[in-house]
Image (tube, rainbow, N blue to C red; front, side, top):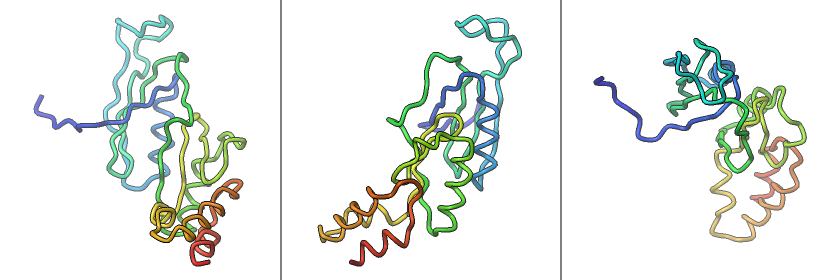
Amino acid sequence: MGTTIQKITTNLWFDNEAEEAATFYTSIFKNSSIGRITRYGKERHANGDTAEGAVMTVEFVLESQPFVALNGGPRYKFTEAISFIVNCETQEELDYYWEKLSEGGDEKAQVCGWLKDKYGVSWQVVPATLNEMISDEYPQKSERVMKALLQTRTKIDMETLKQAYEG
């Protein structure tokens, strides 16, 4: 029992796609891995239809961030109230994450750099400099960036935001 436990770990509740989702996410992000997988035993989930031996939880890591994916049944769904931000250094990197995470996702939920993946999880794929630009000490710069950002229909174009920032 001498295992070190992460102080805060994100838990994602899936119907029954925990292992599939963990595999999907770890295939996209570098420095990622799947860890321990636990299975339901005789004392199964309260919904009563979870088979003994079915995957209960999958521990995984994305870029040093620990996650647990739980197969908890259809009771809860993801909403945009929680999202994961992917900070990108280049347009190529932004395009990569956008393409991979949006594959099979809800196209109607793509706006201003936000997307919803095929599991319903919301992501913000943004330039790493975005917070710096929208909090610039010169309000006219940050206002131009916000205006350009809010006009973005789907994926962010970093050059457009840079031009807005520079005026």
